[in-house]
Image 1 (cartoon, rainbow, N blue to C red):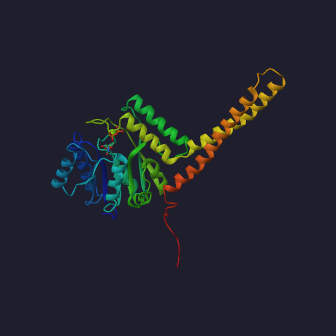
Image 2: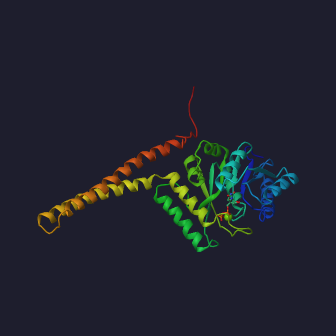
Image 3: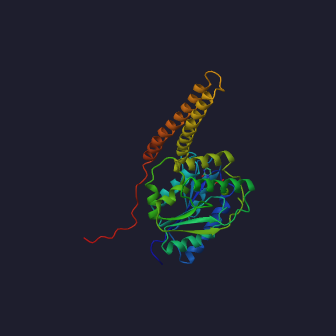
Length: 319
Ligand code: UDP
Ligand code: MG
């Protein structure tokens, strides 16, 4: 059997008591099959992260671990911290034991058979393997429209993001260690992982429906998530203010000329020219200044995130 092939599957769970029995069964079978095929070590585990659920989620996880400690492990967060944080907690716990880590949702909407291809890609030397949805037939029109629109907006704002990829992916230990060096608090993993670099590839799969329980991402959370993603990775919205400032300032000059000409040709009432001129000029200067201040805030924002400036993949050097 090959070295370096301990796989951990990290599954964040928030109030998932309805799906956990089935999910654990299916993941257990998948792990067993991969072990029998010699693709992963028998030290591999499924690691459930309980994100402060108020239902039976943690007792179920604890029981799974008690019955089959060689298959299931659990991480219990002190309270609900949200999907991205729960996932990070799982990844950073698993990285101490694993060579490769797959993250997926508890509801098995992401086809677990794609794990085979991910593990194969890992053995071929890929360090990050993104699961990409080939189609979204099972999503409602609304969800599909908003989700795909989101990816497009992100791209337009210059954020490096993999289209139609959620948080279903494999990462090598090295890649997760790279992730650990991103210390920002506003986590948006889909944007951060491409920043880590290393050799990567994608695996496509069909997305299924949640087989039990309800989505933990209602519209409100989805919008907050999208806004978080955009503001964590792009200062382009600030640039827009600056651009608007420049445009309004230029228009103000035209308006000033127009007001003067109108005055000289004599068809204005008293006070109109100066009012007209100052409204546009002051508006333009204000927007422009806001944009300039924004540029600095953008810089401060990027500095406070303390992102790593580089991650080295390999060094060639002879003493
Ligand atoms: N989740 C979590 N904490 C939360 C909300 C969700 O750990 O506060 C987990 C949830 O248990 C699931 C995953 O995040 O494993 C994705 O949630 P869901 O399937 O409800 O989202 P959707 O697929 O509808 O976008
Ligand atoms: Mg889901």
